[in-house]
Image (cartoon, rainbow, N blue to C red; front, top):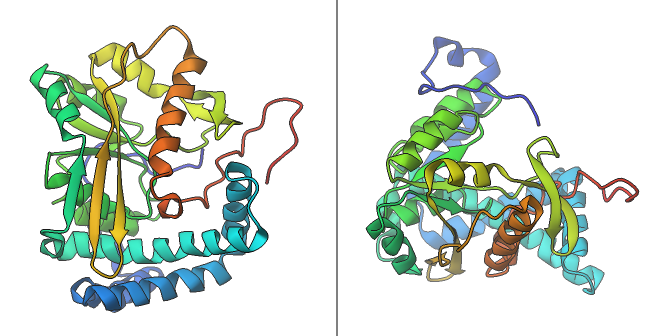
Length: 311
């Protein structure tokens, strides 16, 4: 796991952020901020251009994306993998602008959101339980959190940015979307919020090695899978379900949130079985819009003994 500036209090602005080494970030803000107010079609066009530029520039991420797609969706042609990979990056570019809009012009999403499975969440609330929402790293980024806020209040578990200015900027920009932003290292706060019957978005879909998890199949391939959610449920008796949000229409923007029924008899005494269950949930949600997922993370970085490397 890469190091990061863990904190338990809200990041504060520092005069050091005015130093020349941060001027590039300020310039990007000045260039991108007006696009939060641009027409949807213009946002889509620019987002795809950004994605195409990233596709060409980030060779390592492009290679990882194509490798992941070949592992998880075998049997396609090379042209189909290339098209899917480029689509992932174009969706990422669009997602950057969607998040910018969610931060600074959120009313733009009014009337463009639908939801299925809300009754599962309401049932858990009626039972006076906290809710751990297993999510995934969607290219919609914080726009997804805003969509959820139309129907329920939400906390988010996140990884602080290594760059202190970006950490402050993103935390501040998210302030009106989430009730609470919880550093992933702050287990005490996470447990307390679940005991307070809050809804928390938690994404266990990345490879953090086996210190925090076990090997379990993801698309039929062994993958290091986080198991911390099992301990959280045992400590809090929270309900566990999954949510996913995705864009349904580019030309006339519409977004949908999908919530699954609460898991029954979870956790069990079998750590691998529970990890397999959570991976299956993520697969089902991811397949609703495969190229709106961040495939450029090395999901299969950790390999079992005797297995060849994937990357």
